[in-house]
Image (cartoon, rainbow, N blue to C red; front, side):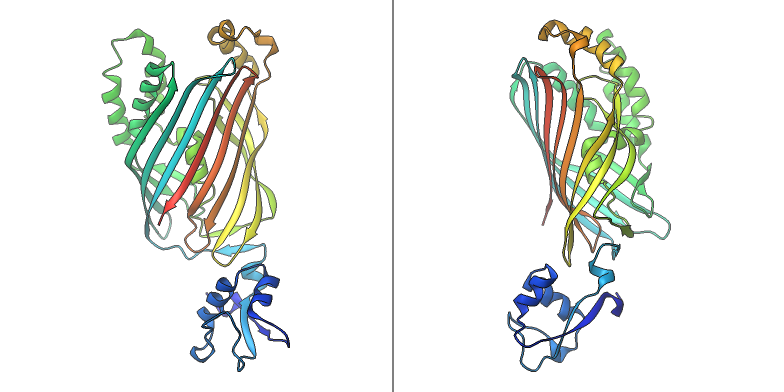
Length: 344
């Protein structure tokens, strides 16, 4: 950082460290740490009180603290995350399935001159079935997640995933799973979809809610934040209830707090566009007889909201809490609460 990151504040009569920090919207610890980062050794702050001999204190400049460009000092790093996903499927207002999945990720990040690389590896995975009448389906879904338990991605300098480096490894894992499904004609459509998704997996990851949260403009070397803005248009979203159905949405981001170390923001899907005719057709064949509600009377909707914290220094996610809801009508809907936490 250069001296453009701070400015001198002349201490006034009656000023306290607490009052100055409060006026800046940061804590005493954050103000003291910021000042000590740039000041002379003789001007270091050691407690919660201003020394009598101190005439000036260093505070964040407009360019480093207000809305605008936030520069990140990206460095090679290794982090671990705990992911908890609590999902329920309701039919006739009763939970048909309720599962809690806990995953631990190891994430390795390497900075490059023209692109960055990141490796995500599943270290632990545990799933609890609290209530399920569809165990065979859930067992199949577990198997279909195995090829993605290790990912090596190439990221652009802006932080978006450009390429899956270990695509061949993912395809090889799928071939092993497929060999155990091929003798059952009930899995023909699953195999057809799998051959497509595991040979070109980047579009699949971009539609996945968990990965969308994790790669929501993280790892950027430079970001431009507005207090409230649409940061992505035509984001594809996979349906959980209707296999193969894809909706599109815009993502609105609201920055509601920044301090010296982190930025706090909310995201929300808006302007959701769904293929209602295809959804009605699948609903008629799969769910209508169970719910007793005619396909022409469904009121399909998707929603996803998240609240996240991002590190300003490394550009990585610190934590995120999200709620995803897919609702066909009041008697058929799916909910998923996703929590991502950095393990310190």
